[in-house]
Length: 297
Image (cartoon, rainbow, N blue to C red; front, side, top):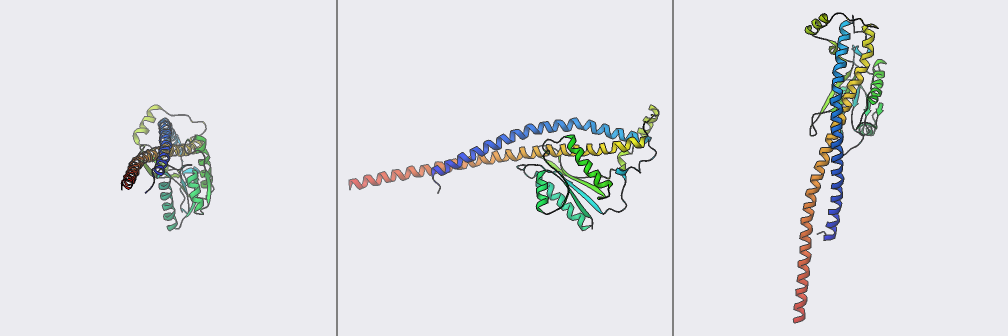
């Protein structure tokens, strides 16, 4: 049985650990609120961007010739982009992304397709390198607070791979934020861009006819060719923000559970310490009584 001093040292150690986990929980909660605000501020911009592209596509004679909309007849190579974090201590946030991405890798290889990896986040990069998988690109150091420039860099690399026909499809795997307790693993095709995004219904066409004709300068096809890369950057930026919010939510939940478990462990250790101290007191009383009996006999 451990001594009272050993148990006291263990209690102090767990107490210090609980202070750290509690502080990390509060920091993650503050960052989560900021990440949610950024997502809410970005959504109107993404919706307006989609409306602008659809309106330009309606005025265009053809959009099939645009590079980012071209569907390859034969899909031979696929790029997988897992969005993980730069740090751990976030529960299953990183592991569930890597599990889903590696499962997709096995599925594609089973279909006879080549897989290229573009990793985002130190955790994903390290795990893929440990498995000796070749990376066509890696981006780290910003996953907890992504900027639009980071999404631009990733989009530029993915566009290079696609337009040079090194890959025929690009898939992003990330955690979609639903709440601090729930993060949904999402697999989204980002290239080629779906032409369905540019299609509109009959009611919208009638509204455009009522507004009158617009004069485009330069031509609608050229404007759309410039807008499509921006839309790709916007989608990647939205995925990065969703992933960042999910990471903060997962870390906040994990640290809260760790603090709770530390509190329960401290209670158990305190009870064990009291029992050990009582046992020592009882032993000392028995020794005193035995010594007194020895003196009287």
